Image (cartoon, rainbow, N blue to C red; front, side, top):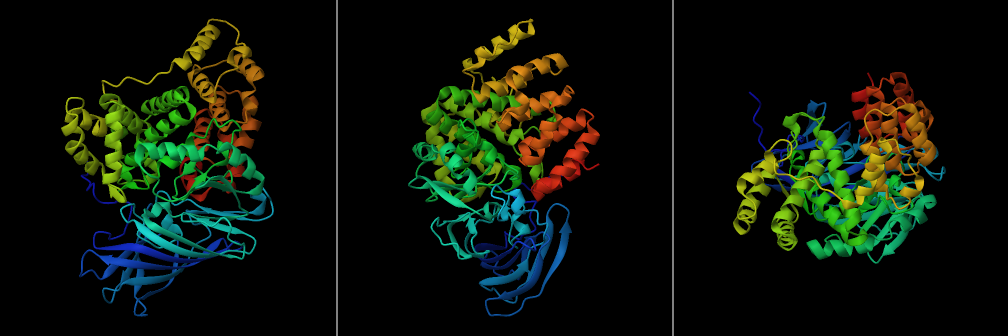
Length: 594
């Protein structure tokens, strides 16, 4: 019999958030590049849900705690009294009274999973080092002792000391004109989940896009980033027309070095972006729209546990598509939904049926495993289905009211289902039944009534593929008007087995091996690896050494493993590993080191 989990509990946190809640953080950090270490003081303000509570449980991972005092200046007894390979360590602080705050002196370890320290040689400018964080899902605890649970939203102030001449930025209000004196101050007066705590330090300059939008980047990338992301202000206006006023004041971005393990990270007021989005033709900027959409669905309304991540990512993926449609047109929006479903279909064929639900079954495992295609694309298909059933006008009203109702709250899957029963099923019971709602949320695989998305724009790709498979010759002239999405669809539609001569011909015509578009290159390398097209191996190695984005790195290493390239995999990984983010290295070591 399988274990019954309490779906209201965050199984990935030690924190006793139901007894005492941290509401505000005052943080002081000193950034030490030579030691790859933060020296910190974290003052945590406490709100007692249980007036008799005299123990404070915090989440830590490889932190050295040096002191804990309360608001009376009394030293408090503390211990690391629980350890777990996934959750890290529990810091147990014995409180002498219902103190208003505790202050913790600490330092991080050089291998903190939430921080990456880059040498000058690993940056674009080659002159100064670089530091950036990645707190999601449970890595904030590796650089701050806190209640590292999405249920525990906090406000914060911070002061950060860095070497003179370098700029520090955080997921807070940033001052682009702050002098590079070595000391920076930050404020986030709106409560955020702790996985949105973020910091970056480096040779950073700022480029304005609009009155409340802009981008930080290394000087060598800044101009290209501003040009690529120049539609961001328009995206904010479109998003506001759907879900109400932008709630965070500014929407700035930072382009990080290539080792950043994600496409983007929705840290409020400072979304983190991978440089792989800078393709020169705006073909990949839907990720900008995605991180912006999180400002409402994810940052404003949050998942209460990592099981409930689909509430963030599914609604955001849908909302992204609406922004793309408004800014770049219906054709691109349709193409992106078709590609979404293509990714989902690939995972449907590989994942155990029991895992194919919207809630992620990760309570006993690693919350990183929640970041799969069901959490994003199946959940998005569910939201698209709701729009189709209700009609856009009625659905937009529901979505707006949902976000307003749960603003600045963390909710579970069951909270959403109960809300839908009280709203959707009451107002639109003729269009969706409770059984259909339950099937979407808790059912395995795709509902029997689901119709996959399609796009007439792909007919020309299908026609070319059909003619080619009948012996026709691919003419480059016939692909002049193709978007990146057409190429992705083309590569994803190639048969599993393709002979060497055909691969060589495709490469001669389109030079996929040297594509400067990271998405196209990744898709091509996957086709090439599984068909032992060894001519790509030098370019593949350069790609895997240069780019640390998990979306590309993980599947390519998996393809190498499955195709029997064991020595090549080991050699490339040994060369690339030091440039990957620690959180990605932990996952790859576990999967490939043996």
